[in-house]
Image (cartoon, rainbow, N blue to C red; front, side, top):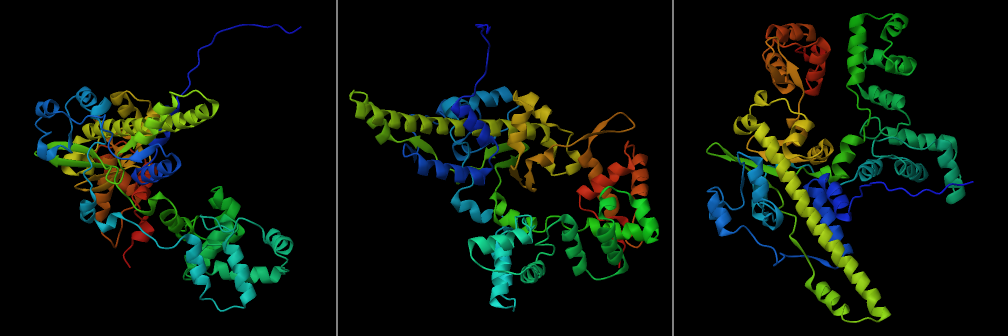
Length: 489
C-alpha cells in the first residue's frame, strides 16, 4: 500500500533577473552590444534613452572625493577600501560607469588591436575554388564538400553518405571517383589540412606541403604508419622500427608538433565569432600614482522602460473586460521583462567593476609599471574572497574579457597565475619565472642555444624550485621554439 507523506524542504530558485545576470557576466563588450540590440528588437517596452527617474552622482558625492571633479566625472578611482567603492557605486548612483570610449575616441585605439575579415571561412574556400580549372560538375561537387566542412576545417561526413544524399535529394548520380577528385581539389586549397576526415589525414596533408627534408619525411612515416603509437607517446618502439636516432626522432617530432590540428580554426574564429575584433571591456589609467578604473560602455546605450507602455499598463488597470486583461497581461510581461533586463545590466556592470578593482589592487605594481615580473600569484579564489563572490562568478567575469592599459591590451586571465616557491621560502608568480626564461633565451648565443636542462639549472641557481618539464611548459606557453629550432641558420 502506498504511504502518503507530507514534508517541508528548503529550495533555492533563481529569479529571471538572476538568470540574466549570470548569462551577462560571460559576455564581453561586443556580445553585450548584440544582446541589447536583439532584446530591443524583441521587446517593444525596452527603448534607448536615460531613465529620468534615476539620479546621477550628486554634488555632495563628488565633493567627498577630489578624483570626481567636473572634468573627471567619468573616472572611477581605485579606493583604499573596497567598501568605499561599494558604497559609492551602489543602487541608482551606479549608472553605466564611464563612457570614456566615445565615438570620437575610436581613432585613438591602435589598429593592431583589431582583427577583421570580409569573408567567412566557407567564402574563403569558395573564392579559391573559383580559380581552379576543372569540369563544371566536379567544381559543383567540390562546393558541396565545402558546405560539409566544419569551422575546424574537417569534412564531417563520409563520401558514401554524401553520394547517397546527392542521389536521393537532388537526383544527381555521382561516382566515387568523381567525388574523390572533388575532395582532392578541396584538400589542395588553403589552409593546408582543410577537408581532412581525421586528425591523421589532416597532419599528413600538411606534411605533404612542406619541403621534403629528412625530418619531414620521417614525420610522414610516423604519422602514416605509427600514428596510434605516437599519440600514446610510445616513442622507443617507433625509433626501433624506423631505425632512426634520438636526434632524428626529436627533429621529426618537432615537425609534427608544429602542425595545426584545426586548420580552419585560425580563420574561422576571427571571422565568425565575437573575436572578429578585440575591444577592451575595462580601461585602467594612472595619474600621479593613482589608478582609475572604468568600464568601456561606449557602444552600449542607456536603456529605459517605454513611457508609452507604462501608460498603457496604467490605462488597462482601470478596465476589467476579458480582452483588456489579455492586453494588460501582455503589456505587463513586456514591461517587467524590460525592467529585469535593465537591472540585470546594472548588476553585471557593478560585478565587473568590483572584480576589476580587486584585480587592479592585487596587481597594482604591474598597472603602475607594466613590469610582468612584478605580477603577484593570484587565483580566482583570491579575488572571490575580496569581493565576496563565488569563484565561479569571477571565472565568468574573467572569461573573454580584456583590459586596456597604457602598456597594451591584456586578457583578464593574464593576471591569474600560479604560485611558485623559492629556496628562501618566498612565493613568486610563474609570470616572473617566465620573464626570467625569456630574458635568458633573448641573450643566449644563437649559434649554441640553451637547452631546457641548462635553463632548469640556471633557474635553480637563482633559487627557483622548478622541474625541467615545468620549464619546457613555460617556454611553450610563451611560444619560444625548442633548442633545435632556435639554432641560427
